[in-house]
Image 1 (tube, rainbow, N blue to C red):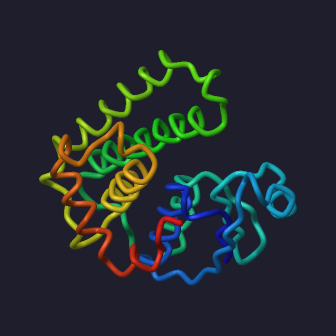
Image 2 (cartoon, rainbow, N blue to C red; image 1 turned 135 degrees about the vertical axis):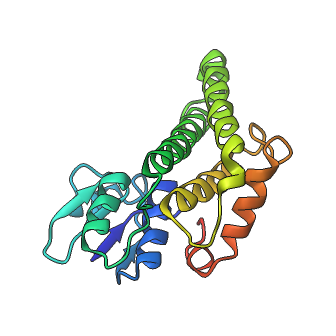
Length: 196
């Protein structure tokens, strides 16, 4: 099994950490959708990270769909047997935070400064704060024992946002999330899967 994509993507990182947590062996190819476009396109013509190539050669993409597949082949689960609706809500909020962070990063790095649309950046920042505010309200429920998919996704999202947009989202504003993420980042699955 091969996981394709760079760990600076929260979507790739959440899959890699989940693979480790589930005990599923895999090979990681750190290919960039920008710098390694041609190499990536030979594996997946859509050049979508993450891409997972299964042991039987099937190419899967989208972190949520990949994780659904992994849950189907694993001997354990990262989704709770009870309160699954709450877990899905938290995962959705964390993925929304990832999406909004990505939008800010792309606007800032792919557009020339004079072409950046400030009203758009302000709107995305409002949405990003809304996602983290909702997660902060539930932060007292987060635990690293046992480490579940909602925990992984939230911790990965927070680290990604802090790495790229710390000027927009500060730990002081969301202290429980910051503390939870710090606890998650010292776990072996996280340490061995650093944000590149």
